[in-house]
Image (cartoon, rainbow, N blue to C red; front, side, top):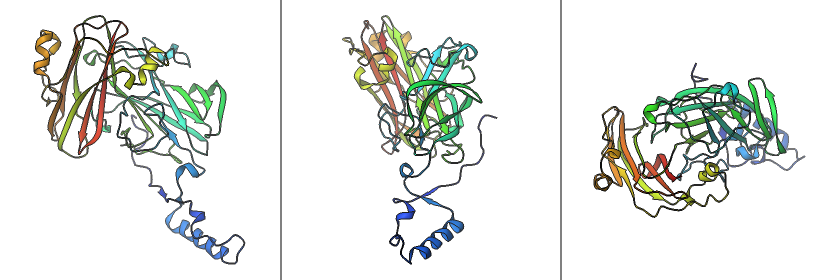
Length: 376
């Protein structure tokens, strides 16, 4: 069974204020008992209404989209560079330690990779039997359930937000060992992941965290900018001596409504990407923007399985003339992909170039992908 549930969880009613504080008579007054009976009748008839989740005795599960993420949604910035999804390449799960060997690793194609997730509970209540699910996707600018590939799932227990231990400890859970720090934990996917060579190990990773009774999530929900239960890592790192190049076919995904979309590319400085701190293991990676020009951009969108030209096979000087910084696409019901290319003729050790691709619909970012060319 690839997904744990077929039906969406019931809708939880919330209000701006805690219900017990709305129109409540003074404590101890004769009117308090009729008010209380009315509240009880309303709960029996329509179900409970909760105040803001942060104020209720409920868990508040999340995976961070960035280092300062507190779970507020929706997000409209870069949400696909989660610092909470880790990859350890050339490592079978059976022999992988409970603590990841690296938090900035990159996947290796046609080899076993072990995945870890750092999950959080910022609520007032502890969360027991929290389900953590791992998925992979072909490189894409539009994550949805339609293209999800299930890898594995496990369960952890998380303390409330006041339970933040002084050090990490190993917990022997019913589904294996994990690292706990009270209200947050690092957990290992129970199955190894072997990325396909056709994608060069550049697949996207998604982790979902939820507790099916007190903090549930719909089985169709895979949108990291819309839901704190979803973490997304769409990052391709190309460590290379000169020259450095990458050709990627980025799927546009199956989103809710056909219509126009705009695909944009940007050339960004290394210090705009906090994830590089994990990759280098340094609070200040000290990476510089390359001195030499980068050829980057898009080719026109094609149907999903069409044969594509590898620009890496043609002279560097000719590539920039063929590439577009942005492309408008009319999305239909058929699968579509857009080719992306980035290359640099000469990149030196200590230099890195961050390139981001965004898909926008109605001005809203619905998906993104990040490529890093880094000298070694």
